Length: 165
Image (cartoon, rainbow, N blue to C red; front, side, top):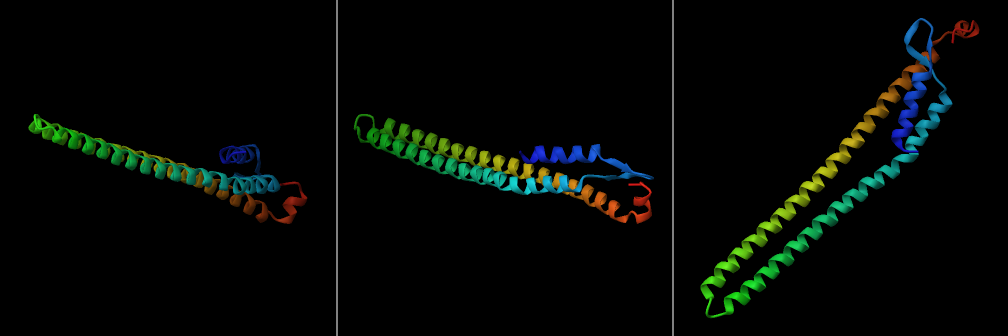
């Protein structure tokens, strides 16, 4: 069960809970079920964290591949430039083409690295937002649970005896 499904079940548990008499904002819930759901969240967190680490690894791999690709492009451009320059008949044209190829290769390499870095930043930002939302949801559920538990504990024994649960 995913964290989102567990949180949804917690919300349903709170929605289906009966209200405490004379206190509309407090509810009586199944404490054991809520504890099971909280434990399920804890058990499912490592999977989500593994996914974040995988994304981080993939981002680093993409950056490394982009760098190697850029270096290869530059090396090929330099080799091609050297071949063109070595021809006597077109020395001037060769220098111009070589410089142009080198500039294009460096621009392409820079663009490739920038795009990879932007992609990595977006993935990390999306991951951060995802976990931030989940953490906020957990805090809300925890607060609701705390309110519900304290409401249940603050009832006096006579109310419980008279069936005012």
